[in-house]
Image 1 (tube, rainbow, N blue to C red):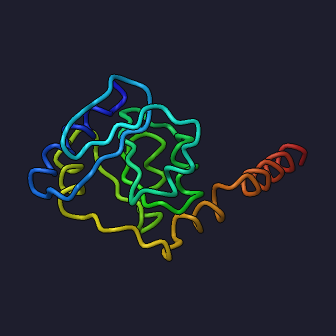
Image 2: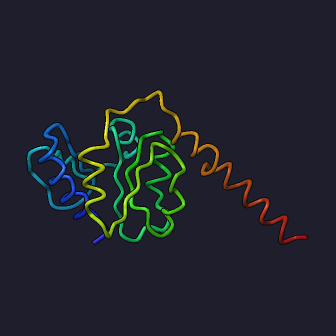
Length: 152
């Protein structure tokens, strides 16, 4: 499993402590009907969802460098993510990125139950991280530097 089970179980535990939590599920899979969970099904427009929610959660057990994280950063949305494999790159990169160990589900439950707040759209840390390090322009600059190093 990629990690959706971690999100679901952690959300259920956290919601027992905070009935105001809501989880929006966007994607394919068996529809979930449950208090606090809104399953909207598949979307061809994830950017609109990133722009409309307080947090995006990525709990992939084997994340090397997910495009979904880069897309989310480009919108500025706060992110809750597993810090394994390539995603360890994001540790301490922004105060709007909460990381957890996928081998310790209690860490995700703790974040969901006790560390969340309504999104402050004036906070730009994730958008600035994207622009400074992960935009296509930055990738192009690094590619040119790499080519130059080969030519030397």
